[in-house]
Image (cartoon, rainbow, N blue to C red):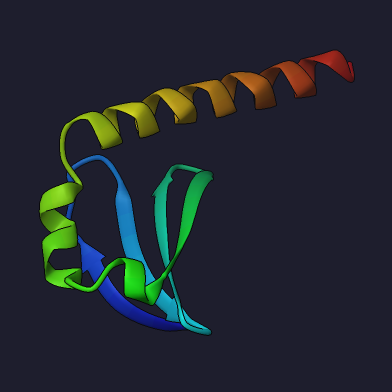
Length: 80
């Protein structure tokens, strides 16, 4: 797996990797990560990806992270 680009962001750790003809976009915060896999041909202009990492997409990502943390907390408390 090859790192193509690291996209700076104040809240998230965002990286784009290339592997086997696919791009893997990973967005991390704390111990949680979301990954999106797309064919390299579906994202021909990698330089424009940074502009896409704004607004509604990242807002939805933060909501998923909140749900992930909640689910994880519930799982841990249900085993006690």
